[in-house]
Length: 148
Image 1 (tube, rainbow, N blue to C red):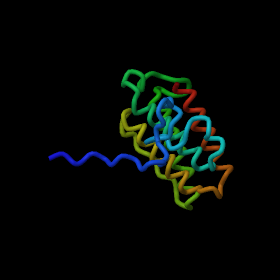
Image 2 (cartoon, helix red, strand yellow; image 1 turned 90 degrees about the vertical axis):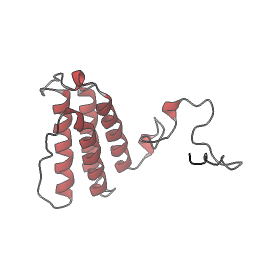
Image 3 (cartoon, helix red, strand yellow; image 1 turned 90 degrees about the horizontal axis):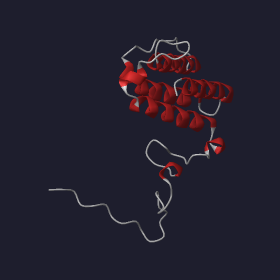
Image 4 (cartoon, rainbow, N blue to C red; image 1 turned 45 degrees about the vertical axis):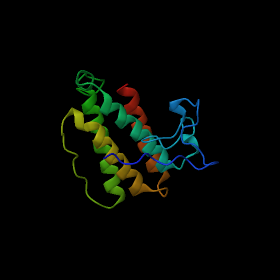
């Protein structure tokens, strides 16, 4: 048997997806904040938002695009892996731990590696290391432009 359908929202309860709202402007899974609002978020949330968008883009890329070269890297996947390694190194340094190399698990794993290492860095930094978060965000944005 199928589970029962979800209960309708309570009268007056806020809607997550208001009728007529464009999907890109609504919070949802993997997009906790509406576009254009990230500048009002704490630094750690801005980093995780940017990392999530980039990771989702890598997850959706076809193999041919992942393996195409970009300036400075033999492929988009290699550029993403290099970013994941830098994010992991920063997180471990903030935790007082030695660097460990993020393994090359293949082109299709890069999106997940970016998400994990970016979230680890945001957690390690919290809001107590704004310069580190700003540098990481700039690095994510640079890789996003490079691999677009």
